[in-house]
Amino acid sequence: MRLSAILFFGKKPHGFKYRGKNRVVKEIKPKELNQLKIDYERTDQNMLYLRHPYLTVEQSHGHMKDFKMAEMQTFWDNINKPKNERFSQHVTLPERLIHLKVTNAWE
Image 1 (cartoon, rainbow, N blue to C red):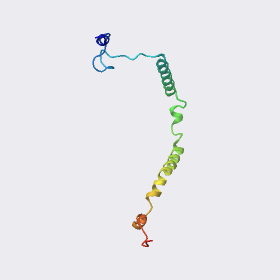
Image 2: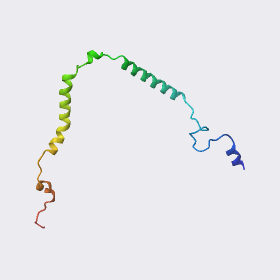
Image 3: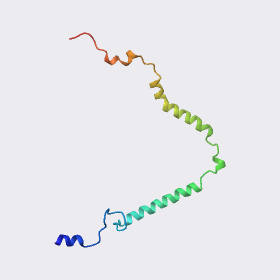
Image 4: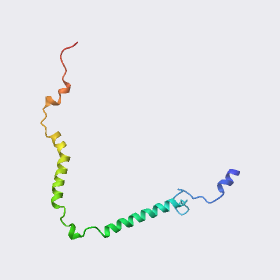
């Protein structure tokens, strides 16, 4: 009887504990509030940088055109070079099956 008295004491949520009208709400700690404040300050600083960029639109128009094409071409050449070397070789069937070759001599 004592166990049932303990279980009936206090208000408990019905069903899933963390959802619904009678849910158990997690208590907010000062550390979490400080972290949220830091996140908001970081977002505000990023928005400031986005609103006031270093270069204007006219200054930044086309300033990387020549460099970008050459840089991107060398970048993709470096990426695709091993792939092309690996797959562009002409491989014959005997070369492919050389590991299956055994000698006829028995010892």
